[in-house]
Length: 159
Image 1 (cartoon, rainbow, N blue to C red):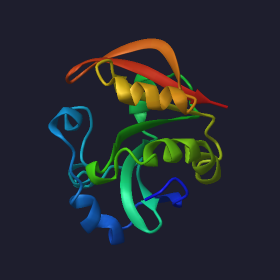
Image 2 (cartoon, rainbow, N blue to C red):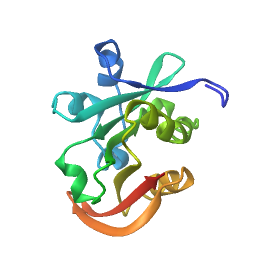
Image 3 (tube, one colour):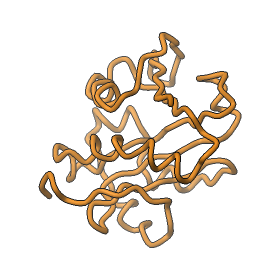
């Protein structure tokens, strides 16, 4: 893949299931997120699985949450919570994550027109993810939460 390869964000459908189930992450990354296959096993109302495509091939995955869980991170009733973000190990280092996060606001504005904020929590030890989110416009809110493996930094992208 080169820098001009087409990245698109789409809502999950079963046609991506096999490739998403084959995603792998190194152990030092897997501790910070959930693999798509495990996440897709748990279907929940108000949770929208999304796929990052390079051309037509899944290279990444994330969830947009419109559940009560959002209020653990913001008081904004027009916010979505981004969780379970991952890029398949074989596709890392190629700019997919940055290009996908750069498209996120337009994707959300189109499909969730009531939303004016996206929030997320990133582990304080996951410095590469913090840098990615900051580079893509997310700001540290100053809020901290305790996660399953330590302190989480709450970040937001507002418009």
